[in-house]
Length: 427
Image (cartoon, rainbow, N blue to C red; front, side, top):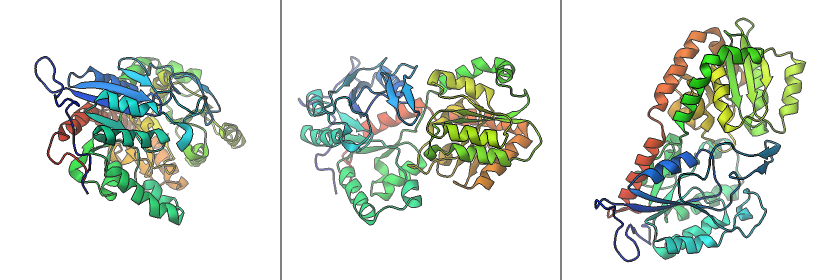
């Protein structure tokens, strides 16, 4: 079925926006739940493009201000700029003082007026998880504004985690109803494209906007710290020639820190090794007890590490460890970070990034989710051949050269141009 509100890329008065040289300029609005450290650099790049007049609408300022992160178990203040370099607006939320969590935690009626008054050429949604998103879809329909849609969803979670019968029945129907209102889909990677196609989206309406991080930041900052690598290792009590694994994640059941420790314990004795646990959360105390009980040499608990300090952790390390992934079919953006910093990767087949960024034997290993023997075997291979780890790290950096914000910008522009075609709406 065709998108009933059709495609509209001109302003309400019928005149398309143009730069002074006559080139096309698109008025693009993005609706986000709250400022996110991975998205802000992309917004700055989009705003810098002459073809795009960008406005970001936030439902909450959580993230830009200090907030209690229950999974970390502490208050968090991100130490990188989240609101600089692009036009943005924080919409009043009727649920004052509420956290960004459940469906009713974000109720921002102002999105209706913002969409109608903005005369946007497109409205970009990131999910359907809040009341405000439903308001935004209705507002876009009333204003005749085409929708772009980008989500982290894949089929991994649905395939591996049992769902109640009513959810299995209703979810596809709801998604198809939502997707019928969307004109173009922004895919973060292979498994995300598969998700869209599975739910009836036409391939020609899907554009590649890969899930990315600020590659330059992580590469440059890791390179800045790397000359001090031996000293930094000494400060942590780690041998200079050890193969070091990095686990930068929340200490929660979903992230499976105990799997990392159990697999580390199974690595055969031999060459020196270490494991940096960079995170905090409800399982930290249990993880520390496990490491102490089994006398795991080389395990270091760093606590919460803010964004600007992560490159130092990566500079000390050789291999990223991601033993998780089943929670939502997560992408796993720490894979991007570590690869940009020049690390090899060990990730599970439930981490969506594995399908696009991890070349088994090339820049890392993809292991079966929940299989400790498989995870330990991959870690053991890394420890046994440090030079191979270094080659894998160099290959990671090469791969990231083609998986950046620049590819995102080009994908967004392609989707916006698609709106001008006769069939630029979802069927």
